[in-house]
Length: 376
Image 1: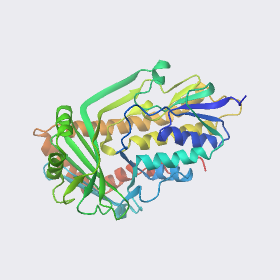
Image 2: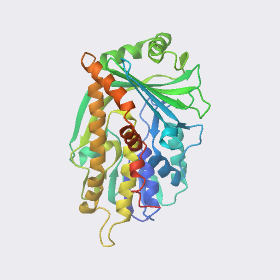
Image 3: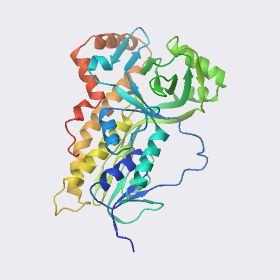
Image 4: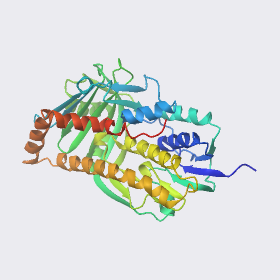
């Protein structure tokens, strides 16, 4: 009979696999529950994540960082408002090699799966098994969360994110671009390495318009997108199917209890306009692993007082990011005056703000967390 599990992680996404690898380094026996893919999920995943320095360093330590073809460094970011407002960030101005890295989902999952396969302390499971600690990493639609009696408070934005991959006439030059206008946010994230000319599209639009855009023939969809991008990309060509999902801000009322804990999207969701969702989830994984690593010798893995240390440490960061993204979304969702004038005036002032702009950039890059990692 196999030895009992120390930890059972429900959910084998990016956060779940990262946690499994971190906990295995402490010689804990970890079960990783990998659910079968849903029916009709044969299409490739068109999503891409903007990962900051802290997330990159974590994945690199686990030997799960994708090759440069699938993890493109962002050297600049250009944010444009709807009436002349503009903010520009540059890695050179911040004294860093990159502002972020745009990482494709499937190559990252593949690298994590490979690392898990060669980790003898991790067993991939089809069904949950009893363990001293259950970690829920099932995402926003977690069923286990409800089993533990957790209320998940959701605030919908009446918006959908439309995602796809594009090929651009002009190489991206490692620049990420974002356009705000008429209550919508359109972002193009560079893909394909430093010399690439492909991009990940994330277009946040109101629900009725999302249905219209998804139903458009490809040439008409490309034309609508081209009207936003202008000359920045040259002609754009859709090279994948379009995917879409509802946008929301959400928080679990409790993140832990005796013998269980939540992490990642199972605990919190934020608007994607700042590209920080997965960074928050990976920070959860590192903090939880650190708390378990530093526990007193007499304290069990499922001790609720121990798990609350993790909850307290992470809730403040998640709340701050949630309030920030929510405030920005509300500001840019107002198309009428005086909101348009106010936000564009604010963008121009922020771009000239010097130390404030530098501080915000360092926060987004994860620089504020670099001194808090207590593990090798």
